[in-house]
Image 1 (cartoon, one colour):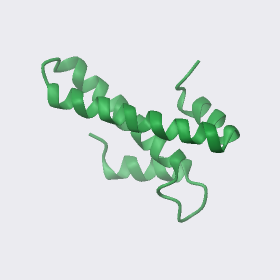
Image 2 (cartoon, one colour):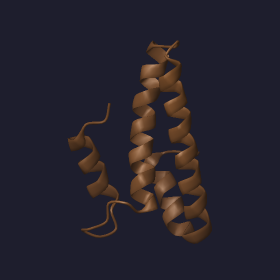
Image 3 (cartoon, rainbow, N blue to C red):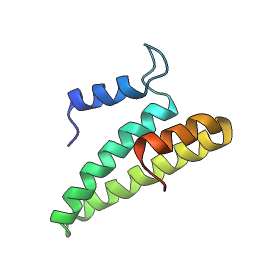
Image 4 (cartoon, one colour):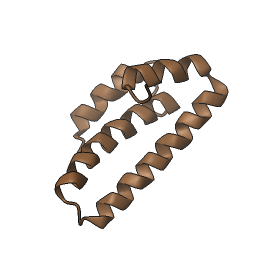
Length: 88
């Protein structure tokens, strides 16, 4: 589980301004951290279907945010992919 301290660190790393906590870049970064955490949990507990469903929901939310960023701000999209190491 992502602690509030970890989440604040991710937000400060990816925010555009001092008040930015909800931009698409921040949300993608937080979702990526949560996805990575849930992947480890699902590998250990392969019969935990509710966590698997939550993982799939987070993946689809991240996909939607990335699609939005790709349409609106291609430079930020490419930078985010490199920083989060999402696509090769």
